[in-house]
Image (cartoon, rainbow, N blue to C red; front, top):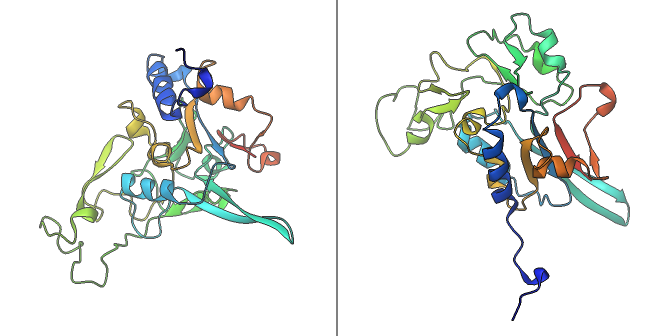
Length: 253
């Protein structure tokens, strides 16, 4: 007996996005334009994307690349809570790059706004210039500060308490094994679309960790991609679009 199409299980969008990513990897880097779509109707405010990002990038206290904002929508008594994940929106006309006095932050050929930690002097001009408050400063803090396990003094030793913080973090394809030297400490930090994962054919951590499958990623120029399909939705919008920053992160109402 034939099975009706409606009876078939719906394909996980992660599978399609993985195929889209593989197809994008066949293109020249300069022909790719990365983008993200976040469906606010699907977001349940679980913060799994935030935690996934922190774990992936080994972020220290006070440094968060992807916050989940909460807002009240409607008028009493018909009100509800809406959750708005807000990573760096990777503007195509980014204000942050214009104010950096040492050109430590710029937009790469694929449309991602990135930071060179070796150039950054920690002036924080970019933090002030970003209209989305998507940048934070790394003050070199540890989760184990004021505890018996002080990682700053235990570098090189292996104990159960400090393994996580001493584990090297990968950003932009580089390793930062010691945050006390040659590291992002004192610099501005932000979401970078998990470029180190894209390089090896993996989707960003926030996409794969999303419980509600509310985050979509891909090449905005690929007409066969799921992302391109979603960009045609009448529900689509961008944050503070009136500023002319042209974000690469879109939202579905």
